[in-house]
Length: 456
Image 1: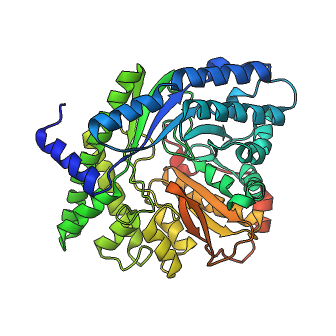
Image 2: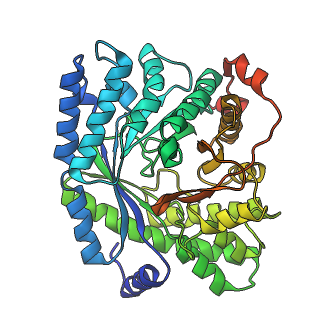
């Protein structure tokens, strides 16, 4: 369906005045045909394939920005979960995975993308021997690479929750934080723990390219909190049903822009078009904030009573508007509430309006979960594991994707700030419940799937 003149004018206004951008254009690359028993051969084949298929991504993205005037904030690549790609290698498996991580990171640097995702494993029902080695490799792999991001899926609604994996990940996150302590535990900002992870997510740090995806495809992640905030502000004191309709129509316009850019990028690169992820992804800029949208709805601060209901309205309206604009909506699609990347969320934490428990409640209705949450570096590993368990339980019971990107910052305590710069912003260190959960986490095992998982 061609764009009308009115849509073109509206797009120009949204990009110039309301912070609309394409948050990411992500090239998915399957590495299944690279598998080898020799790690040296594997790394060479992976590097060559990523460079060959990814070499034109940045130039094409730059062309689209110049021609259409819509900013593209990030150029990214997602690959097949590397736990699968490297499992057949002979020798020291931990060292092999670190070598593979370096090869992928080097390829990302060569083609000039901002990030590459896929240092990932799917262990929601248990571990293979290769996956056990992969988990052990995570702290080193993500600390010695610059652009590589990783994730582990520990739960699904159909399989339940792998508490053994969650217990390990608490310790792994602590180790990763220590290895990158000189950078404010930045390594933890590149790592996500999932429940119900999706195969076509274009957003970092959780992107990986699922085994059900084609050889290569383009997906886009749109943004637009500023556009929605402007619409809510203009709407004034209308009732909530009317406000939902206004947000839905705004999301339709935002998604149409993403659809255009994604399809045109796929055509020029000669690859398949994947999906548009219509998540509202904030930045630290004033006027580009999901928290600010909630405040414009009538809350004094994000986190005030009513925040979960307001976020539910927002997320649902965004999904409905996006689904009307594209037949290929995928990824996460909803509203992100990363604390460090949203100026209104940061302020809400600073003034005491938003704590970890309220944030967790809000994640039950948003598109991801506890995202870019900084906590004291002294937080025990079992507490980190328990926070992860709580969040993935929300995802499992509600049959939705939830995730945890938590950062125990060494040497920092409650009330202090850690600054990452760029889109990652700055995070206030949030307090954590002091009561023990050690015996619960030590039990291990697998929490069975809920009854709603039996759908056949």
